Amino acid sequence: MAGKLQKVSESACFGGVQGVYTFASDTCACDMTFGLYLPPQAKDGSVPVLWYLSGLTCTHENAMVKAGAQGWAARHGLALVFPDTSPRGQEVADDAAYDLGQGAGFYVDATQDPWAAHYRMETHVARELPDVVAAHFPLDMDRQGITGHSMGGHGALTLALRNPGRYRSVSAFAPITAPGRVAWGQKALRAYLGGDETAWRAHDTVALIEDGHRLDEILVDQGTADQFLDSGLKPELLAEACRKAGIPLTLTLREGYDHSYFFVATFMEAHVAWAAGRLKA
Ligand SMILES: N[C@@H](CCC(=O)N[C@@H](CS)C(=O)NCC(=O)O)C(=O)O
Image (cartoon, rainbow, N blue to C red; front, side, top):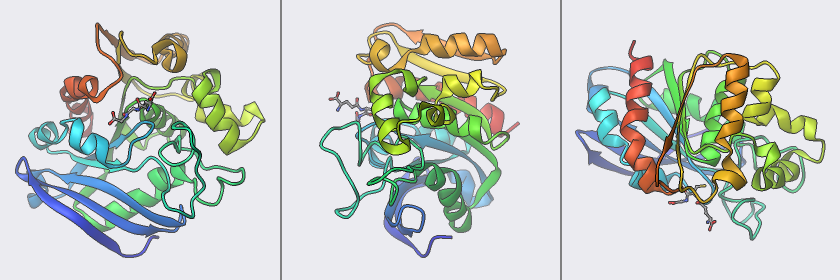
């Protein structure tokens, strides 16, 4: 269990509080920062939690300031957690490219040097941070949902598939559906997990489904003008895997939308409502 939580900031927001906190992470062996939004309903008791995992180049901050999620979360009485996307610091291995190293943790626990010392983002997001937030905030950890964008969509889908029953709602914005089959995913998984591609399958949504992992249902939105659609995201592979596995997938192609937070913000209301419908039932 991580040590003391330090408050970086707390700001009133839609009747609740948008906070930023940092703590010495045992898992990542560095300080880790996250954003947490508590809706006004948290003043009266514990509230369900929606995890939002961000994409390449992001910190905890991008979605917190650009996605417009807090107003919808306040309406539905959900807390939001915005984890960082990688370990951080001068002593933490990095790469000059935007799709490897700091800002690009891919929600896996690295087994390869020089990454293994700090890059343990799966354990950070799925084990350590839940313990930290549960200990400090009025959250109902029996009612957790997960969503995310791009690399964070990959994180949301793979963590949900790998932790059956943990997340009662699962959705994604423009997720990397099959990292083992696209360049940025192959690069990251090779670096973090090594050259044995069988190890990658446990962190690849399409492969996990092909290998028998299941979810009750999935919501995905994807812009048709997304610059990474064919090279990095491949929603058609997810659609095919879900069809074969009998997983209900609500995949909507959004005409003219690109990969940016303008797209995420446009469809955030629907994803928060999707989570609320499943977490509050
Ligand atoms: N920097 C990359 C793009 C990275 C990118 O699009 N990142 C997305 C997630 S995959 C993002 O959310 N960026 C941060 C932002 O828009 O605030 C490039 O130049 O191709």
